[in-house]
Every structure is written in C-alpha cells, then in structure tokens.
Image (cartoon, rainbow, N blue to C red; front, side):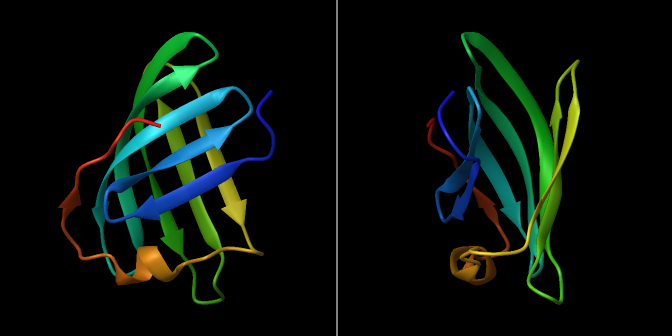
Length: 99
C-alpha cells in the first residue's frame, strides 16, 4: 500500500491516490468544484471512470469516484485541505497528466 489518500486538483487536471490506486484526472472546473474523467491503475489493473468533487460552504470537500464497470466510492475531507488551486481554476476543460 502507498500510504494515506491524496486528492489534488490543479490547472493541469489532477490526481487521486489511495491504497494501491493511482488515477490521473481530466477535469472540468466550476466555481464550487470539479467534474472529472480518469484513467489509472488499481494495483496492476488498468482502470477508468468518472466522478466529481464539490467544496461546501463550510470548506469541506465531498465527492465520488465511479469506476467503469465497478465500484462507486464516496469521499469526504474536512481538514488540512488546500482549496486554493480548485477555487482559482478557470471553469474550462483541463488536460491531465498521468500520475
């Protein structure tokens, strides 16, 4: 296992990592969050899917990762979150780079 979960959104797209899962994101930003498609790996298996993340009025980050032909995984983060890049991102499509 790779350690604690990590979610990152930036002008190049972003990435999500948790356990043995590593995902590169292709994002569409709004004022309050992001919608994304992803490709990546779960251990040695290639995976893809979509999801979203929203910033609440209280600063919490909530969302869901949906694996194509697989699981739907909600997430919630309330502390130690840097929202600056997500809030300042332009509401346009951003290209991703693989993790």
